[in-house]
Amino acid sequence: MKSSFFPYWCILMDPSGLIIETNLPLDSWRQNPLSYFLHGTETIQGENGSAVLSWQPGKSPLSFPGSTGLLASWSLTHGMFWIKMEPMEEGSASLLENSFWKEFLSSDRPFRQIFETNQAIKWILDPDSGDILYANQSASQFYGYSQEELLQMKITDINIFTKEQIFEEMRQAAIEARQYFRFRHKLKSGEIREMEVYSGPLQFGGKRVLFSILYDVTERVMAISSLEESERRYRSLVESASDSIIITNFETKILEVNRRMSELLEYTKEELQKFSLKDILDEESYADAIHRIPSLEIGKPVILNRKFKAKSGKIIEAEVNAVRIDESRYMGIVRDVTERNFMTRTLEKSLKEKEAMLQEIHHRVKNNLQVISSLLGLQYENTEDPNLKRILQECENRVKSMGFVHAELYRSENFAAVDLENYFTTVSSNLIRAYGGLPRIQLQLDLSSLEVSIERAIPLGLILNELLTNSLKYAFPEDRSGKIQVKIFREEQNIVFAYSDDGVGFRKENQNGSGTIGIQLIEILSRQLKANSEFTSENGVVFRLRIPDRNPGK
Image (cartoon, rainbow, N blue to C red; front, side, top):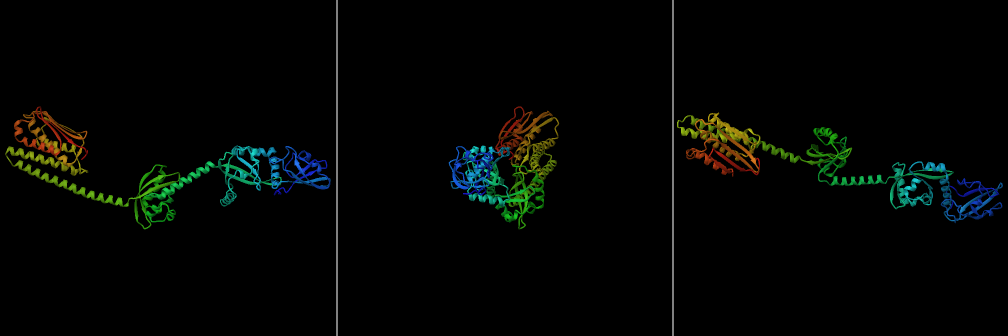
């Protein structure tokens, strides 16, 4: 029943009933008659005694029920009455004491000025009863209660922690050497807010109270919680990923690895977290990592080739998708490409060997065709029969046209395709030389740079050879001047070969004679190319060949 700090409410009263002194901070009571506040004071007479007093209407202390009576005991000493009083109800002693304190704190202007100088939430508590002795306006606004309502409440009406949770929080604060507590407070609206409470004891008139400054940290706690949850999900994804993952800081210290990375490098996770990249990369890869890390941008991955050193000493070739994930951390998604690189090198070596072999084949075919061409030329020089000379020259030109394809491929880096522009230019130049230059005949070549397979290039070259041979021999008789046009271009899904001259056209004697072989050869080669051909020879020769080409470059 007795208060820890005020065992009794004590009053010193003179014989006239005037209050001289009290042990509670009630300046407004001093020099006022006790009867102004309490009924029954007229019974206080004699050297000692006791009586039950009750409150005058509206005179009970702040937040103290006026219906609660007081048991007054007195003694007369040196002409003064020394009165001690206790509430009649069990447990009301601290309520009486705190009510006087609330009245004092609410009425003390200097104190209230200190308490209301800024927007921080502040209050004063009785550490034993938990009564809120004073709360500033900021507390009232934050919690949604009026100041009068707060002064009728205990801290347990606001703090939703149990005694066990409060004790655990105090223990945790001591372990972490924190100067504050973390509690959860309920507002009048029912909303729960996360609070940081900075508390310390104060002495007021012999009473120890608890002074607290409170900060709402709900948003911060939620942000931290969200970040922690994100971190947990992130770690879960990292750990369950099928790829090897490593996370480092700016200084290349390894912060985190997943299970797959540990298995790849043959170290435990704990061992790797003691390492930096220098311990697991070869010298060249580490030097490049040091150079590249500062230039990595958040959210912009780059693919790097790295060589890792496993615990066994094995070198692992890896493709690393590296990205900066925040201001201080970098993540690498590591894929072991050792086997893939080995297969690539093996294939490249095999391809180079085949290219060398194919180049040698083209070289030998070219040389063999050159030998045949030379033999035909030698035979041409050693015969007097003009018809035989003509046949030998035409055969030699045809052989050369085929040989030019292999010469073109031998010089090219691409053995699968022939550049028609270069090839047609070579065939045309050879025939012009073979027939003595013929400056009176103008040859116009309009050739797109198209590439076709050797299977198409040789028939096209032979067709050009036959057409150009016919024009040079028969189209411009009796030193007649003229023009020959050769075009090749792509049109939709076709290669178009167009040939024309403005000569006399094919004569009947040519069609029945040596020219017949040329025409037959053109028809055979056109069918071989699966091409549509158009041929007229009324006002000169006009030939057009349309070759299907659904796979350009083939």
